[in-house]
Figure (tube, helix red, strand yellow):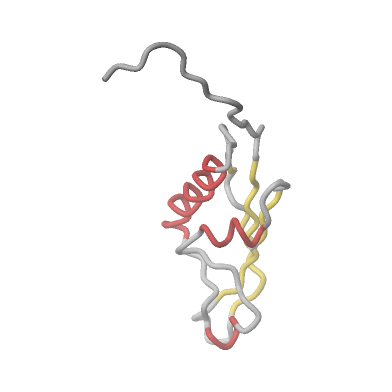
Length: 106
């Protein structure tokens, strides 16, 4: 899994937000933990958007992922794919100083 267009947040941090679609780890070919599930992609992508919003990015967005088939297993039960997810971070906003003026009511 690869994120394209992200500068402020690493691929690893973004991949960590995704619960159903997981990037392969070093031993994923043994453990079988890497997975991609199209029906749940939108839910995972929304988690990535929320992650950005929690960090001050008002209008983060993602585009449709690019899924490229790399290889099928000989028994046709598994398929290896490359998943590229375009991300648009947008501008980051920060709140400066809050002040309250006037009388406090009891």
